[in-house]
Length: 212
Image 1 (cartoon, rainbow, N blue to C red):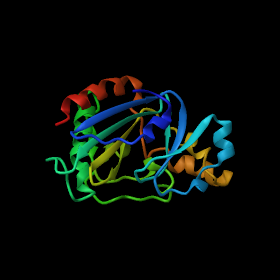
Image 2: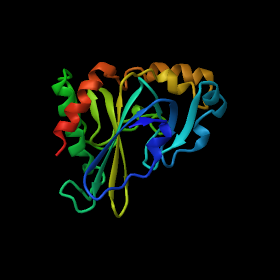
Image 3: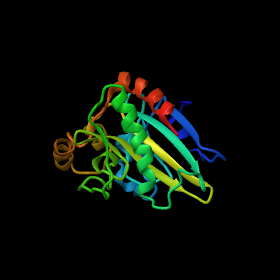
Image 4: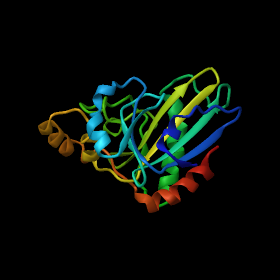
C-alpha cells in the first residue's frame, strides 16, 4: 500500500495471519504509544515538512519517509500457533524470518537478538538507539526494529527496516540543546545501519516468501 505515513496508524485486525506493506510517500516522525509529545520540536518538524504522528505500539520515535524506512505490519490472531504469551519471546519467530531474508539477499551477518531489552541514554526517545527481543542486527548495528500492540483479537507486529541511517535527521527534530544534538550524532552513528533501497527491494519478497 502506498500513501501518506498516517496510514501506519490505521487499525489493523484480521481473522487470519495477515501482512500489510506500507510505502509512505511523505515524511513523518512516529512516536511510540507512551512517548511524550514534548520530545519533538513541532517548529523544527514543520520547517522540515515532517508530520508528527503517534503509533499504538511502544518504543521510541522513528523517522518515516521515502528512502528512509520499509514498514511492514504482521497480524497474528490470538490462539494462532505463532501466538506466544511471553511478550518478549513473541518477537523471536518474526526476527528469525527477517534475518533469514536479509541473509538470503547478501547480508550474511544478519542476526536476531534474543536477550533482554538493551537501553541506551537515547533509546527512550529514538527507537533504533536501543535493542529489543527479536530485533535484527548486522554486526553490532540494528537494522530491523520491532514493536507490537496486543489486544484480545491478537498481536499486531510493526516492523521497521532501515534503508538509510543518519541519526542527525531525527536528532534535528528533538527538543534538545544544540551541543547535546551534536554529541548525539556521534554517539548514535554506529548503533544502526541501513540496507539501502536495492537490498530492501529484494529482502521484502524474501521475507514474504519465508513467512510461516
